[in-house]
Length: 441
Image 1 (cartoon, helix red, strand yellow):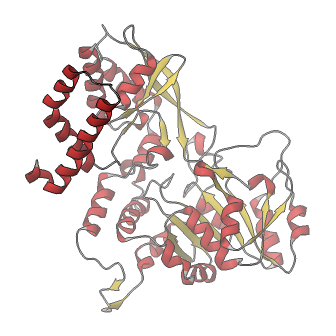
Image 2 (tube, rainbow, N blue to C red; image 1 turned 90 degrees about the vertical axis):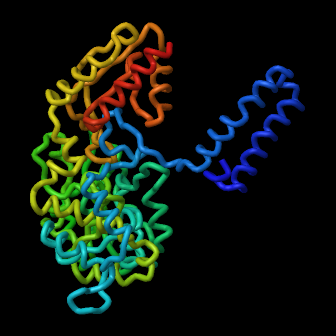
């Protein structure tokens, strides 16, 4: 063990194991016989604890929940090609900020700005660490000490207690609420504009939807007002939905391309949601405004590293060639039909021991997640598993605690697996986990 782990680490972990035994002895929790068994098992226990100490707490998992952009399990999974692009950038030197043609220092945005401008028809683009950082930079650059108009119905809180008012306060901008929670009219914005108004901010509603007696100005109305008052209109589009979609469940989701074409001055959005790339906050729009954000000293604190540039560049190249549905996992999952999912589900069901588990295939719904198209469901086919031996909660726990954890959900006293978010090679791992449960009861 000393050869494998080092003398200092073996000694430290051994001391922890022995001290735990001493505490149990002092508390009279161990009989002499039990202590003898513990000491006999000392070496394998020590080996296990050493392996556990060096194992990263960040581990891969199988997502069988059917939530495609699942924030708790890493949002958008990357394609193997995007991951390889990250490896290539990470394991050697690169031209991150070097211009090979001119032989002098370049700028890291040069790797992404041209393709974003071509795809979206914008004048300029830059990239920050995530969309919260992108919004912080925009507000701090364009509205420091000045008012930003935001509808009360858009003062959202999303996962991790991230609140729009809080990020605005930290940016140094002054929040000016307009309208009401359910109704904000163009006149509310118009009446609020004064000589201290820096910009109008429109925020993606993310994980919620207000229905019923509601009103929100059309984007065209706000762009006209912003142009009339000579102040920028900024859209926090959030989800990274680049183009209008043919999928019915995304028909109401705003696209970055359409938003820019309407005349919005700046748009920011996430890289690891519907875009299907790595974590990033992309800022696109008017050149003078993007250049101002890029020049903000805070950009250095919020900038993206070389490996994420590499993954994002590879992902955007898929959009340029129209191959995102073939190579970007999020789009592969969005495009899979309920019939295709059902065929996979039936194949997996045949591999699960019918003597221990009862498996039904039934229709259900997948979710997009990540704040995109809230409450819109994608038709799918589900495996619903019950057992006379194991409770639903016990099955869920055992799958979650596999060496490669398998995440499921529970509905109507059934264990639910949605293969929309499971990569085909992972189906055998799921079958093996059920086989292990069947053999171990």
